[in-house]
Image (cartoon, rainbow, N blue to C red; front, side, top):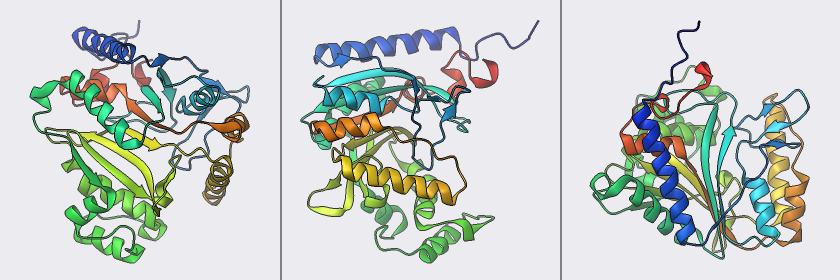
Length: 318
């Protein structure tokens, strides 16, 4: 008999997790946001170079997010929607990561990304409480965060300058020649900025550089920046949101660029989601959306130091 059959999370933690899920559903029910349920398996994978999908033996992919089918529902006239879904990302394992995890994703039709940030504050405050969030929310642009913590402008700084900054900050890399500018920015952000964020409050970092737009639209008044934001509590990233890109042509170009990057890395190049692109072509309404990790949210609520403390059976015990 295996000695590892017991859950890694205490039963009391799992009860708290269940209450948080009830709070989330009550929050959206009160606001008349429709709960939806979309497929876990897809014929198309994710082109994003920094996220790897699990592929089945039947040429399907386990979804890394319910984003694409949810946006198809938006294009079909669903109105504002949310989903609590199991998602899967290959190679993501650690204190804050499990290859299978739970994601809360929601979209607000006709809202700008700043309005969505306000609603996120309402939901997170209900779950974490005002004792834990004892200071007003903080909003910093991506550029302001780099200026404040590292005294550099991330829009103009060169790769060589970023490498020097990393060395000055005590960040040593074995193969710095393999780092491009975006990778240096990600490293410096993760090591020297993120640990300071969300201490006693929610911190939003917003208006990311255009090259990090992902599925966000570019700002109408400044094409160097994207309507993307991330939220942090106690130094931990909880979610990633966008003022959503609705231009099918631009989205296809971004996907094709992702595949080129994957090719340069000798990474698998999945099929593009043509159904999603067709939905954008048909006319997806203006919307803003966000994905928040439920497991990390429960970690924040319980003050847990590891994801294993808030999920019953992590991958190594499943």
